Image 1 (cartoon, rainbow, N blue to C red):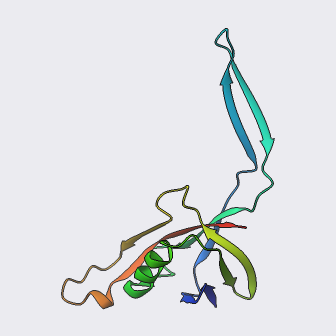
Image 2 (cartoon, rainbow, N blue to C red; image 1 turned 90 degrees about the vertical axis):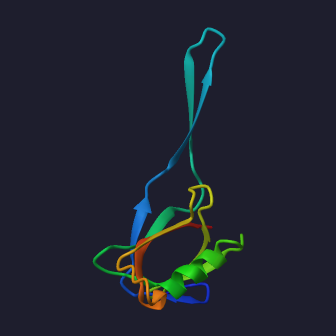
Length: 123
């Protein structure tokens, strides 16, 4: 089972980790040379919950609920098959959710399935 906040998601979503361990700041000296300052990041890991075109499809209702959730800046509990972590949407990586319709059906939108990603960061 996968649950984000109170929203139950398809059990076959996969986690794609984002490996970003160093923060870089680039400044120019008076002579125009670049100086790069590196610092390890001591914050939670960034990752995406991904539904592919082959599996993990979300319903229209799930996507609409996720869109509503992105209007809040609150932290959420993610339960990923029994492993719980406190997360937030990665608003800095716009948009925090991205979904595309797999089977656009004009006469019944409730039957449309979606694939895409939910961008999260552990806090």
